[in-house]
Amino acid sequence: MGTDGHAAGLLLRRASTLHLQTGNLLNWGRLRKKCPSSHGEELRDCIQKTLNEWSSQISPDLVRELPDVLECTVAHAVEKINPDEREEMKVSAKLFIVGSNSSSMRSAVEMACSALGITQLDSVIIASPPVEDGVNLALEHLQPYWEELENLVQNKKVVAIGTSDLDKAQLEQLYQWAQVKPNSNQVNLASCCVMPPDLTAFAKEFDIQLLTHNDPKELLSEASFQEALQESLPDIRANEWVPLWVLRYSVIVKSRGIIKSKGYIIQAKRRDS
Image 1 (tube, one colour):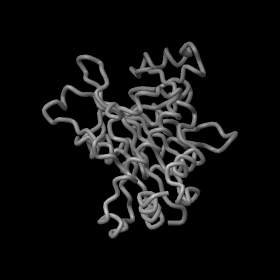
Image 2 (image 1 turned 90 degrees about the vertical axis):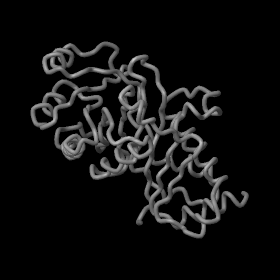
Image 3 (image 1 turned 90 degrees about the horizontal axis):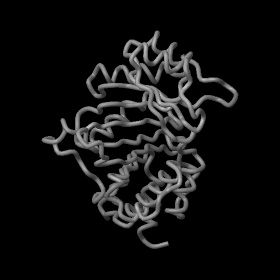
Image 4 (image 1 turned 45 degrees about the vertical axis):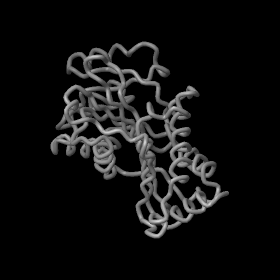
């Protein structure tokens, strides 16, 4: 492995937090040549390509500095929204919690805003937070995350908030408890080809938009993240790193319905740091 890999290895041994940003995937010529078979495969591919590109461009100044928080991004892929065009764009995000608690949601939204050069996201959907095997997702699991989302709405960081994969009973419980009501609920079409009638009726009554998605139950596992890290940077101890959350964003031109930009932001932490 060359000097680039050694520099990356040194930085990752000293840092305690890693922020990985892909920038606009539509600017990644190499990524578009191969069509990933799933969102999980796309994300892993993005992690590796971002790490490879970043590690080949590490400056000596960064190595001397040895920052505690390592920003791993590819400058040419980053694309901020032109302020004059902001009103014409809809900026949406979906947040996947991997190994962190609800307090990380604010930093995820703030990093997305910063990456895109804006002050507010139009909508944030939270994927169902992980629960132990054999445990059904209950309102008490969702509450701390939803409270954080409500704070973000009240602080004008997010306009609308939504859920993913809630059935009618779960959605009703959340709706009755929440101060800021969910305005959407995503349903995975792999688990039901037809929208459940009770869910459809409830959503219609309370003006909740039902959307479809095809994300896997686990978009990024700890093992998958560590494998991507190890393959890109063989010099590092990948098993020391744990992903905390993944945020996927998209920027859509409202009048034409076309995607102008999409990308991923990931935060990971070194164990015991």
